[in-house]
Length: 80
Image 1 (cartoon, rainbow, N blue to C red):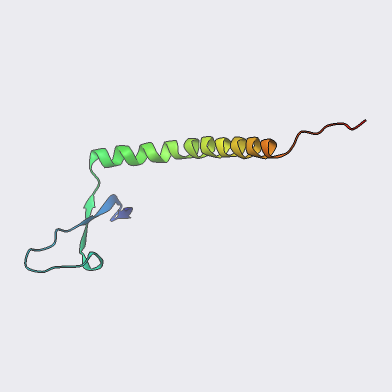
Image 2: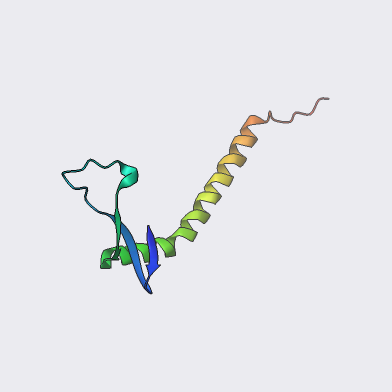
């Protein structure tokens, strides 16, 4: 999860569970840490490429649905 915390891009990191207590996944503690350089790069890459990937996937879906619709309809034949 990425967020803005104190005007810095940050992420939540699970804190390791202590050995003495057995915590369920819902009771785990999290801490806010600053993004690493790699995290910042991946975040920027995803933000810039997402619209392009979404458009391509939407186009492929549209082509596949049109193709399957045309295959499902029997060809029109003229009766004389």
